[in-house]
Structure formats: C-alpha cells, structure tokens
Length: 347
Image 1 (cartoon, rainbow, N blue to C red):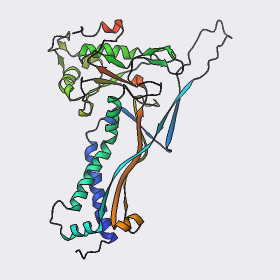
Image 2 (tube, rainbow, N blue to C red):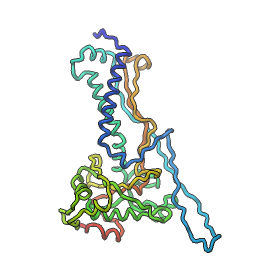
Image 3 (tube, rainbow, N blue to C red):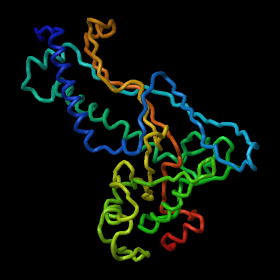
Image 4 (cartoon, one colour):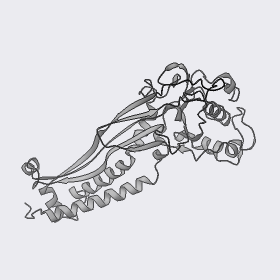
C-alpha cells in the first residue's frame, strides 16, 4: 500500500507536464495542415450564429432621358450555424498517481499513459478542423447548404432568393478525369458563372485538391515546366500552359480526401471582404484543458480521482457553393457544349 499523499502540488506538477506535451503536440501537427486554405474561420459569441448577407442584385438600367427610375427591393438570405461541444477526458485515481510516483522506473504506468494521452489529444485538437473539412467535402452530395439543397449538385440557383427560375449553375461535374484539358474546360465554366445581378462573378479558381492518388498527376500538370500527356488524351507536349497562364497555387494532396472513384476538387480564390468561404469553421470556445480534483468535486472525491478534460465548442458548415467544386471521374458528362469542346475526348 502506498504511503505517499497526493498533494495539490504533485497534481499541479503532473498537470503542467500534460499541458507542456499538449502544446508541443499541437504546434507540431499544425505544420502540415491544409484546412486553412479552403475554410473561412469565424469566431462565435453565442450558441447559434445567424449569418445574413445581401445578394448582389443592384444594377444600372436605362433611364430614358432621366427621371424614370426603377426601384428594386434589396434581398438577403441567411444561414444558421449551431455550435457543438467536442472533447475527451482523462481520469487517474490518487492511488494510481502515488504508485507511479513511487516507481518512476516502471514503464507503461498511469503517468506514461497520461503523457501519451496528452500527446494524442493535443495533436487531434490541431487536426480537428481539417477532419471536419474533409467530412464536409466527402459528404457534400447529401448534406444541405444555405440554398436548400446538397452543397455539391447540378442545379444551384443563381439567385437563392428567387430559386431556379433565376437560372442555375453546377458545382458537381461528372465524367472528367484530372488532366490539363479538363482542368482548363472546367476553369472556363467557373469563370463565367454569373451573380444574382446577371454579371459574371469573376471567380478565380486557385487550388486543386484530391487524395493521394493525385500526387503525380497534380505535380505534372501544375508544377512541371514542360508537359507531355503520357496517356495520349489530347494534352499538348511543350511548355506547361497551365503553369504559365492559370496561376494555380500549390495543389493539396491529402489522404483525407481519398475515396473510391478518386474525385478531385477546385477551390476559388478567397477575397478578404467575402463574408463566407466555401467551408466555414466557427469557434465558440477554443480547445483547452481543465483539471478537476477530489478537493473541488464531490463525485471525484467519492472516487478519490483526478480528472483532466479537453474540450471546445465549435461547428463546421458550408459557405458559398460557387467557391468549391467537386469533379468525379465517372458519370454522364455535364459541361455545356461550349466548354466541353475544351475537354479531353470521352474515353
């Protein structure tokens, strides 16, 4: 039986060590994350956040020699995002702590497991927004966005307030394998998507993303100085026009985006005054660790246990569907004819 008394000072020393490990693990994991490139981050001050924004409907019209003004109603839409609590916890009894302190040479004891838990949970806290981003992208054909339909679909209304009578655009393309020609065709379509006022949005596709399958293809098409299509699907041999003319950023190759069928994604440039991005990470309370002891909690006192809780409140949601596009390699092709002419011939 242990004769060591677990004092608050001893617990504080253990807690400080756990926090040190947690912070270091967080910093290390942050070095290789891509989610910030495709998600807009927002702070939250309540359980639910109501996002409202005006649609671009104002336009200049003929006045017939002046004096004949048409007065147009301003329209707005909204989207509600509700924060949820996420986290995990570690519990150690006073006996477990005392035994570990009296036999520090024994590996695999409670304190070793506590250190491992801190390292794992710290890494996961840094990684959490990226997991949510991958989840939204993989499930975008079923989960709903603010225009009352799946985020990735073929009939988004140009004006969500009016509906599909205003015209539609697609952010889900079918039957296009990744290649220089297909990228150019889809990029042309994206750049021509109009806003609710009928004027092109002047969208600029910047980031190509996909699973590990695309490591070679992305680098060949986007980074190589010279490009030759080894499959003979129409890609030109010579200077890499995509790299010279399209100004794409470094691609995202992420195992989180690997799935059957090898879909790939295009993300448009995020302008600083945009209210929403393609994906949103909303944070009500950042992840943090709190400690509880038998001296401050009746239930823990009955168990003679100490507890460390790692938790935060946040939410991940969809933003503008015209800023993110999913391209699948199978299915019936759906680019309009004028853009299909730029694409590779159907296999």
